[in-house]
Each structure stands twice: as C-alpha cells, then as structure tokens.
Image (cartoon, rainbow, N blue to C red; front, side):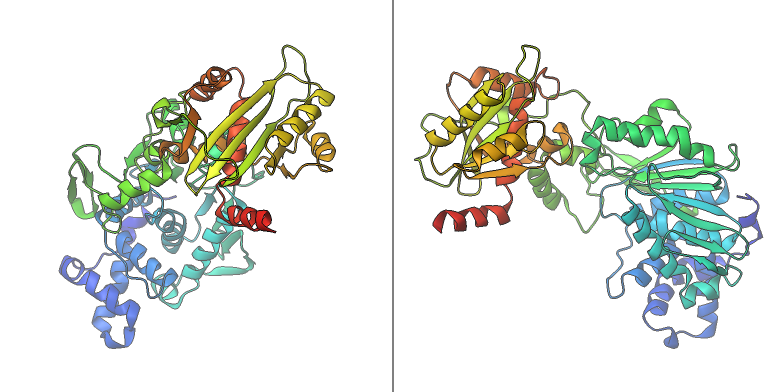
Length: 503
C-alpha cells in the first residue's frame, strides 16, 4: 500500500462534514430523490474520506430496513482501521464481542474502501471456514457492485473474468481474496491481510486446532506479505482461549496495537475516535445500547461465567485450570423415583484392558424435567471386550428401560452390535475433542442442574477426575458424563424419547 495515496484526496469542507453528515447519509440511503445535488456531492465526498460514514452506508446496503445505531465503539474501530489505511499502523488487533459489526467493518467495508482508493491493492481475507469466508466475500461484492459505490469510486472496475465467490479482481490487477486457515496460498502475495475470527469458539478448546491455526499463521500466512516492512495485518476476533491467535501473537510481539472492547467495561478507559475526539468509558458500562448490562448478565447465566468472560469480556481463563467448579454441583440424599423422567446409560469404552490403559466407564444418569440431571451410578474398570459386553448388559438389566449410549469409536461398534439384540442402544459419534465436548455443558453445571449423591463408593474417584479436568491423568468418566449431557440436553431429542417411551 502506498501511504501517500490518502493525501491525494481532497476532503469536503468541515462545515459540511460535521453537522450534516449523519442526516445526509440517512436521507440518501432511504430516498436519494429528495436530496439536492449539492448535498449529494457533499455526501459522496464524505463517504470517500470518512470511513465511519462508509461503514454506515455499507450496513444499510447489506441490511435494508434495519436501523443503524451509531454507537461510539463503531467509531473507535473505524479510527483504528483508518490508521491502517493511512499507513500510521501496520499491526492491528481488535478483540470484540459477537454481533458488534466487526466483520462488516473489517472484512467487508475496509477492503471495499481501500480498493476504491487504490484498485491495485492486493488484500487477503481469512475466516475460520470456507463458508464464512465466502459469505463475507459475497457481501463485499454486493457493496462494490452497487450504484452508489461505483459513483464514489469510478476507477475501481471489477475484472469480469475474475469475479467469483472466493476472489474479486480489479482491472488494475488488485484483488480481494478469501481463504481459511490451512488454505493453499502458494504464489499469492498480499499488501494487506485481514484475519476475521480464524477459529470457532468450540474448536478453540482443542489444542490441536489452536496450534494448527497459529502454526499456519507463522509458517504460511505472514510470509504472504509483499512488503514485510509496510504490509499491514489486521486481526479482528472475539477471544476464545488464552492461546488463541490473539493470545499467541501478543506473547510473541509487542508491535500490535490492541483495541479491546469488552461487553462490560472492567475499569474506566479512554478510546480514540476519528477527528481527534475521544470517548471516556466508565467501569461497568455496557458496550452497546442494544445489549444493556441486565441482558448481558442473563446471557452470562446461560453461557456460563467462563465462556462469557472469554467471548464477551475478552478475558479468557488460564489454560489447565479446572473447567468444572465444585461449588456448581448440587447434592442429593435420595435419588428420584425410578421411571421419573428418562434414564440413560453412557459408555466410554477403552480399546484395551491393560494396567496402563484407559478405563471403560458406564455412567447412569436420570434426567427429571428439563433442568435436573442425577448421576446414579458409575462403573469404572479396565475390561477386555467379553467382560465389557457383560458389564453393559448387566447395567442395562439393572436399569430397565434405560437408553444406552455408546461412543462409536475404538471397540464401541462391537459393543453396539452385541447389545442391539437386547438393549435400546444409540451410537454416538463424538464431535470435537474432550475439552470441547465438556465445554458445551459447563453452563448447565454452573446453573446447578447436575446432582451427585452425598455418598457413593465411586464418588471420590469421579469427583477427583471431574474437578481436575483437563489436568487429570484419566478422563474416561468425564467423557461418559459429557456424552450423556450433550445428548440428553437436546430438546428435540428429549421430545423424541418421551414419544418413544409412550409407544
């Protein structure tokens, strides 16, 4: 990118920008016929030079009929992105909660704005999946093919031979190219790289997936900059883990300008805005008018404090800490009446029975209503297949009518086949790694919906593993628990089981 380009632009007189800009933009987006030519010229001048206004115009194009709320934090993001445009900064990191207009601002509006000013620029945009990357690419194409955009930037002409869901080229050989982590970039160079949510929240619980993204950045992506000294990289994402890409990059370098925008302010802070202005945010203040503190606290109860702190407050918990807190768990002296609700038997099977191998675990859980889960019994032994089959059949006979869940890995398929003749069994194909599977149900436990007995022969070993996970040596009991909670917590399936029981 040539830092001198923005200096060639003649901005409109300040008297037209400050008092009139918002009113003109709103009038223009609704009905340009009612706006006189002088104001239209002023509007175009504003949109060509004021990135905040350009974001607003893009929002109207992509969300017709939806009101735009001109929040201060949008201007704060626009200010930092403008500094990338002007060449004042080459490394920007923005950590922003979900649904905060970050993707429209960074992945859609910014490439359109930059290419409008310099159609020779080469911009690479990265998102966690090909589908998401293609969606942002299509939004970008919606903007740059609109009539109002072509009036603003007549020199930005799209090459019709290279205008696809993945890449849009200009007639001056610039482009916006979309990809996802792991994508092949051989021979491709970029002036600006924009990384927007490079990993999904649930995938971030997988160390292997985190490392894959971080290693791809180091070994592949950063080398694609055409000019290592002046090329710019923008990372915009919600925090999802201590060692996500944001955490990884901040540990490696102090060169990043970090704009962190937690949903609830932890302390007083001042933020730079365009035009030399600033916004003073007080501790405890909600980020958005659309999501007041009361609504956010309700969301925190639904997500669980750890997930909320990570994704909404941009404060991920340290890795290795326990995922389940002892104080979340409720206790029972007497189990529910048999036949009340639905009973499940969840099996996590080991492939071998040696002394150094994992355990096979059968966990019995009774669900009462929609928000009470009682762990009734845990069988945990190292067993070879014949013994495992007998144990599964015995547990199913003890809890007649229970639905048996068996993980469909290792020797699980053999167990499923053996049990199908006499037992109601469901094969479970695990989704994600062990931490990811448990993370989906920690909010349930934090709400006090999981009940353990006051005393039981198996309780001590079960609690030791549960309350130290993922740092525990073994995790078979946690696997069996997360398997049944994930399965039984699906409301659609809960209704199906009731229908099945009544048939």
